[in-house]
Length: 268
Length: 253
Image 1: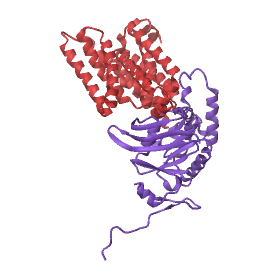
Image 2: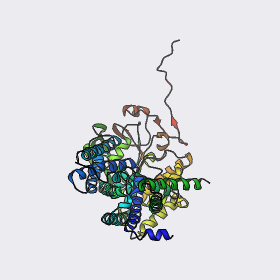
Image 3: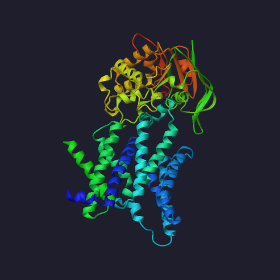
Image 4: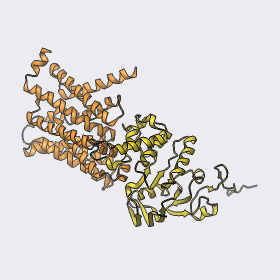
C-alpha cells in the first residue's frame, strides 16, 4: 500500500493512472458500439491507416498525433465511400486503406532525416510518458463521448441494431454513421499513446467480450466494458512498472487473462 | 376507400440490375394483399422501394401517408441475433421519432403502448430477455409489436412465417386478419396455399406485377402471369392443389 501511495506522488504515474481511466471510458463505450455493430475490422483498418499520419507528422515536423487524427478520419470516410459509392467490397476497401496508411507512414519515416524518436511508443504505446496536454485531450474526448452516448442513447442503439428499420423511421442514419465514425477515429488516435497502434484494437474488443459474458444489454455492456477496461489497464500499468516490461503489451495481456478467468469461472 | 399508396410504371433494382419493371399497384386502406412469386422475382425489392430503402429507377411512387405510418416487419435473417438488445428495447424502437434526446424524458405514452402490445402478443414475460435467447415464434411476435408501435395505416410483412412453428403461424394469420380491420396489410410469403386463405387479394411479383382481384388464382392465370407457382384454391381446410402429373419426359415403351 505504501508503495502505491508513493507512486501517486510522481506526476508521471498520476498521468498514467488518469490515462488508463480515460482510455477505459472512451474505449469501453465506443468499443461496445464497435463490437455490437460488428465493425471491428473497419476499426482495425482506421487504426493502422493512422500510421500514415504519424509518418507524415515526423516528416513535416508537426505533432504525429495530429497527422494520425487526420489520417484516421480520412480513412474512416474513405472506407465507407469506397464500399458504398465505389462498389469495392467492404473488406477489400478496409484492407486497401489499412495497408496504404501503413505504407505511407513507413515511407515518410524513412524520408525523415535522422532518427525518429518515440516511434516505438506510437506503435506499441507508452502509458508512462503520456503528457498532461494529452491527458487534457483525452478528458475532453471522454466528456464528448459520455454526452453523445447519453443524449442519443436510443438513436444510436436503434440504428446500430437495425439500420434499415431506423431509416424507415426517419432517423438521421447517415449523419449518425458519420458522427460515430469520427468518434471512433478520435478514440483510436487519442489512445494510441496508451497501448499503441498495433494493440489498440484490444481495448475496443476484449473488455467488451468480458462484459458480454455478464450482460446482453447495450447500455449495461458499456458500463461493464469501462469497468473491465479500467481494471485491466490499472493492473497492467502496475505490473509493467514493477516488472519493468512494456506497458501496452502488459495491459493487453492482463485483459486477456481477466477475460479467460471470468470465462472459466462462468463455466463452472 | 382511402388510397394509401399509388405506384405507376415503377422500375427498381440494385446497381445496374433491374429487378422490377413497369410495376403498378394501388393500396387502399382496407386492403390485405398477399404478395407471392418466385425467389428473386422482386418481392422484397418491391417493399423496400415502398419503404424508401431502394430508390426507383423510373416511374412514379406516391405515398399518400407519412413514411412513419408504415409498420415494417423485415425478414428474420436480416436481423443480427447476437446484438445486445432486449425485447422491450426492440419493441420501443418501433416508435423512433421519440428516440432523439429520449434519455432525459421518459415518454409515458410510448411505454404504455409497448406494454399493451406485448400483452396482446403474450410476450410480457420475456421483456428483459435479449433477442438472441428467443425462439422463432417469439422473435416474430417481438418484431410484430415493433411494427405496430406507431399504429400504422399500412403494415408490411416480409415472410413472417419463416422459422416459426405451425401453431404460431395460424395464430399469426388470425391476428393479421384482426389487424386488417384497422390497417391495410401487405404480406409477402412463399407459402401460397396458406396465405390465400387469409388475404383478400393476391399480387404475383415476377419482375412484373399482377394484382389479382381475389384470393383465388387459377393455373391458367398463373401461367399467363408468368408466375411459376402452385395453383391456389380454397376449401374447408387450407390446402394446396398440385398440378396434375403429366409426363413431359415421355417414357419409351
